[in-house]
Length: 136
Image 1: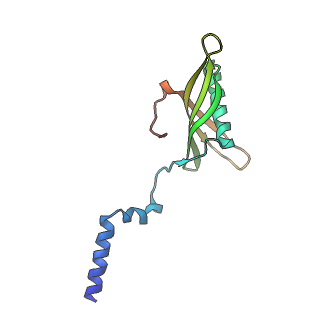
Image 2: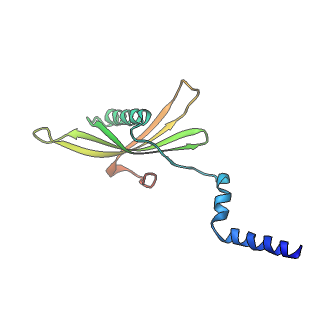
Image 3: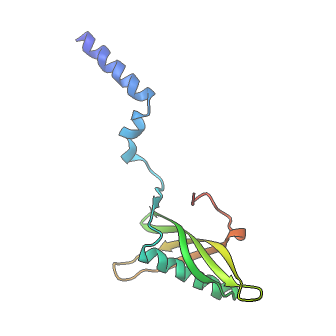
């Protein structure tokens, strides 16, 4: 019986000393969990296009959507939060020269039911972006 207790104690110490504890308790972890999303997904592309349109209305700009370069999603307190890195362009200069711009978009989906979604957008250009750490 004594050898059994010593064996259990040694195994327990080993588990606590290694990363196994984190793996065993991973499902109890609290906080936000960012998941990578497909940048070519129709919903992601639609949110990115809408965010560029909103930026254009707010800033009287003429940017045109090009593509989503990176997309992440987290669920926090029942609200879906999308973080998108969007590439858009604007015609600038002579001869129809195109100038690219990177936008960082945070979209909050305050879904009330399966048919109704209320989106809140926060869109910034690369030079104005206060946060870069959510997208890697």
